[in-house]
Image (cartoon, rainbow, N blue to C red; front, side):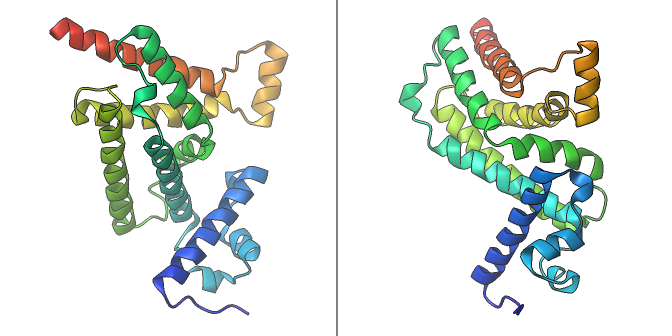
Length: 220
């Protein structure tokens, strides 16, 4: 029997359950399979019960995106700065490979970023969006600090700009490297190339990191 959460801990757990259910539906289907009714059924709530925690499926996807970003940040905290060599082009290429592998292991970040680009203004209140943007900015700020500590960037502003550019790139890259079944069939039939998500990320990151270092040397 459903009982409404009373404590913040209970509310956080219910929200995690909702996000897990949404992620599971996405893994087995597509965005169109994500409905409030399907989510409610999976977590054992009614639609009315579900509305105590979230207002729309678009809000759920936004929260799932933020959770994915938080998971990436947690992985970044685990990087040992002494294992990265930012003093050479080869070292920067290795660092790019580390970051690309880490990002590709969190595919929801790219998948949800691509979805949210087209639906973010639908059924998401301004207040919710502002709160989520603040969370993203805070995580990006911490992430930029970690990149500076690893020696990949000279200051937090440059690192933050890199992270925001990266998030935009990932959102555009994901659909191109994960075509829908009908698109994949057409690509197979015509020989149209489908790039590797991780390899494309690695190439982009290499260009960004090596280019930044070369630019700084040129100005110095």
